Image (cartoon, rainbow, N blue to C red):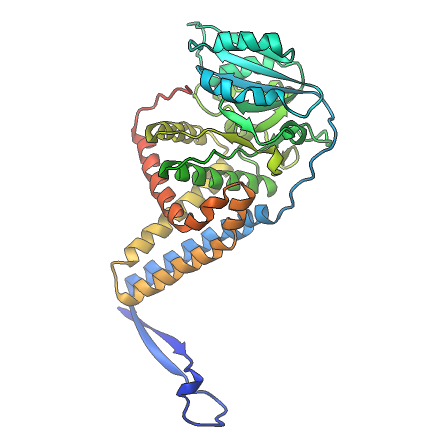
Length: 405
């Protein structure tokens, strides 16, 4: 069964032979498509519409929102919490930047989680120099299941102040005003602040892919938070109240999985009334990316496991986003095996998708400190899709046990 499509073309003025004619002649081109081609192209177009919902009604909100004004004074004291397991190299390189913060009253709580690489000796030396450093030491013990969540819990218990700001041992604040912007907001109803943590630039395809994936993750969780649907945060740069943690029994609901000390806690307790985001460049925290493909795959595997415990509404809207992206590229590839006419229409739909997104994402790449990636946007978009598809397959059928360090 075939269907006919008419494409209308208007000729150039130089082709008109009759002068002073009121109406230019119209030419028709007949495009013949099979029923299967029509179905494939219709599904492809529908996938595009779903994609455009996320682009135009979610992510565009983040591109348009104004950057918050940096506070000029401190409100309440802060406890900064860092968990470290065999992180001596990173601690030596980045930890001192925390003590240089332009904030009058704060402490740095470092949890040494069973390290044997010289971390303990290094922290002992720092304690003599910085009175606002508090070290919590975790020893090997068969009575509990060790992991980052236990380390974070020990750090929170040891914290002196109610407002907790979290980062990692391999992270460095973008400026001395990081804590000033991540401090507890004036609105007492705000219990959670979601920050942003870009990865440092290195010369490799893996690095570009990691930073691009981090960009889209950030665009997603920050945009949905703006829409009143916060569903995750990153432990490299976020803050919440100590009282909120203990009121909700900490990580008790998901202590059995190795990841989720950041995103699962936010997913369970954040809402449109108690959550804010921070976008100011001074509030960013730079982080060291994975340097090997195997390390990155292990990291994504941990995140994949945590995502299974998200609230049902969050899993639905995020799954919908991923599924329709998969279907979009899948049906586009399928259309390439049919007639030339079907191929041209599919290529037009793909081009429309890229053009629309190119008006939005380059601006967001600049806003989120990844300006250098904007020229590679279409290529990285496809590579990231292929990589995440492979990673999802490996996460489903690979080994289940994954440690945090």
